Image 1 (tube, rainbow, N blue to C red):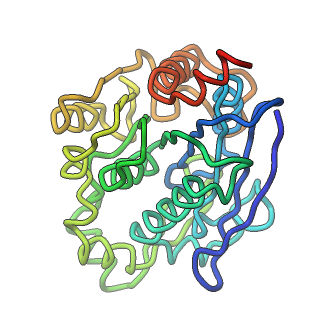
Image 2 (image 1 turned 120 degrees about the vertical axis):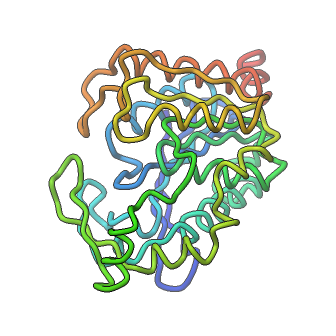
Length: 284
């Protein structure tokens, strides 16, 4: 596997850091873009392993960090907390579309891919749904533990947020206190229709595999059913014994049974709908 790191500046002062991974040999003609969760990164938990699994199946993989995910020059640590606090849903969606355009136009890969897929986890899965709903060039979509909506705060939390201008959340893995500026809430409320995940789900035309842990305590598995009802063409897989991270901590040593099963289904989905990988496997 060949890895190349990249930096992109979607707007002045903001940096997207990422990796392009391709199999040895002729450049693949299909690509999969990985989209991380809230509090996540391209190096978090199962993402490096999953990228390698997809490369092994014959795809190029683009895995990146949103510019405001709190990760800076040190790819392993949340050090840019002020930037994390200033993140918004609209910024993430804009950056995903930016990376998608870079991939489709051939600016990130050795050759322009014939077909591109998206795989997003958690909030990144919801952003992938929004991106896929407005982009006909996406050939396949996979979401893991995606939200069906972004309105996830109580009325009391919103009132305090508006009053104090900042709230704090605890990182599930590190225990760090992470700031969230009120601009996150204001952005969502100002663009509620544009950021309506369930409405966007109904507009997705790409073949879509919805994967969700049956024991997910962070994002209720019923949200996967809501997305599936919104788009009857989508296929739903509820992973038995799987939580939000498919039984995987930050430092993944060995994939769990449920993580391996979810990855296998994702690989089969992309193999079925990204013709570039099939061509490479046939002639490679």
